[in-house]
Length: 331
Length: 268
Image 1: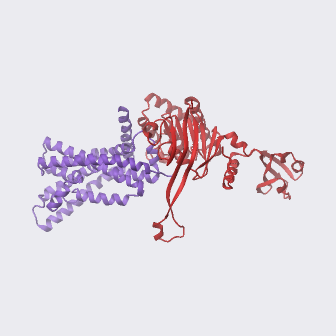
Image 2: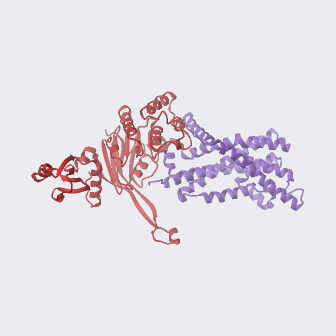
Image 3: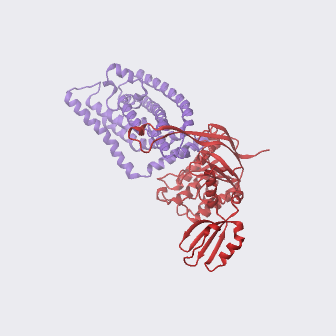
C-alpha cells in the first residue's frame, strides 16, 4: 500500500498581477496592464515519511507557492494535494498541528518580546505538555547554543540568533512535517552545523519529514532527494547523487602558474577564472589523462595544481543554463 | 474544547506581554486618553457660553461634561477596530502566512489578540476613569442600570469586532486600508455620539441613528449610565444590536470563506 507523507498530482496555480511600464508617466502608474503568471504548471511528486527533500529553483520558480499550497495557505487552481491524509486548504486547522513552518528569520517570534515568550506561546497554541515543553526546550537550547540568547528581546538578537530561535519555535510541538525556507541564512558556521544536526536528529528520532527550500549548497547536502522547479514546472526529481552525476564528466582544475606565461587554455577546456597567476579551468574528465594536458601539468610553467569534482553550485548553474537553452533533464 | 480555550488564551497572554513591552509609552498614552475628553469639554463649554443655553438636547453643561468623560472612557473597550489594523499589517508584511498555519482560525486569532489590548485598557484606564467620573459627578447607578450598561458594552464590542474584521478583510484586496479605516472610524465616532450626543441630532436623524449598531458603542451606554433612557428604549437598543451582531456574524463566516481563497502573501 502506498504511504506518502505528501502527494502532489498535477497542481497548477496562476496569479494575476499588474505590469507597469518603467518609463510610463504618473497617470499610467494607476493603470498597469493585467498579466497572468503561471506560478506552478502541472507539478506532481510524492514525498515519503521521514524523508528530507530539497525543493530548489531560482527566484520566482514556484517554490514558495508550492510550500504555501502544501501548508494550506494557498488554494491551487487545479490538481490534487494530500498531506498526511488531509486536503491542506480545506482541512488546514486539522493539519496545522502536525506542520512546522519556518518562513523568514523571525516569523514565529514576537519582535518586542524575548524568544522565550514565543516558545511559551507555542506551548499554549499547540497544547504541548509542560514536561515535554521543558525537555524539548532544554534539548534545543543546548544543541543550538541559545542559553545566553533566548531571554533577550528578539529585536536585539542577530539575524542568526533569530533564525535559530525561530527554528525552535517552529518545531517545539514536534510536527510530522517541517517546511524550512532558507533555514541557515545569516547563521554562523558552527550554528549552521548545529541546525543541520538538529534536523537530522529529528528525522532519526521522530521520522520527521523535512522540505527544504534554500540557495545554500551546504544545506542541500543533508537532503536525500532534490526536486527542482523552473518557471513553475518540475524539471528534476531524483536523488542528490543523481543530480551530481548528471554533470559528472566535468572536472575543475586549478593551476598555479609560474609568472606570466602564455597558455592556450581553449584546447584543454573552458576558462572559468583567471586571477594573476591562478587559473581555473573546466575540463572534460578524459582530458585529465590526455598526453597534452599531463605534459602541461608536469611542465615548469605550472607550479602546482588541484583537480576537483564540480560542486552543487556549479551543477545547478549548469542545470539552469540548460533550462534557459530549452534542454530538459527531468524525470 | 479545553484545548481550543488554551490555544486562544495563549493569544491573550502574548498580547498582554506585547502591551507591557514598552511601559513608558503605555504610561504616556494614558495622558493622551485623558486629554481626548478635555478637548470635547473645551468645545462644549464654548458652545454653551456662546448660545447662552441652559440645556442642549436634554444635556446641561455639567451632564455634558460627564457624558463626554463616560464616552471617552468606554470608547477604549466598546469600539474595537484592532482586528482591521492587525490584519492590514499581517497582509502587508506577509505575516498572515505564519498566522494561517497556526491551529487556531485566523478570525479567532484576531479576536483574542485584540482582547488583550482591550483588557489592558479596561484595567489601566477605563475602570479607574469611569469610577472617578461617576464619583465626582455624584451619579449613583442601580444594579439594573449596571447590568444594562455591561450588556450594551459587550454587544458593542462584538459588533465592532466583527465590523473591524470585515474592514480588515479589505486589505486582502487593497493591501493598505489606512485611509478606509480613518474615514470609517471618524464616521462611527460622529454617528455613535462621540462628538455630540445623538439627542442633539434632528429627531428624524436620531431615530435612524439608534437603529444603527454604532450608537451602542458610545451614546447608548453613556446615556444609560446617566439615566436618560427608558427601560423600553434600552431593551429596544439591545434587540437591534443583537440582530446586527447575528447578521454580521453570519455574513463574516460567509465572507471569510470567500476572502481566504484570495489570500496571497509575500513571495506568491
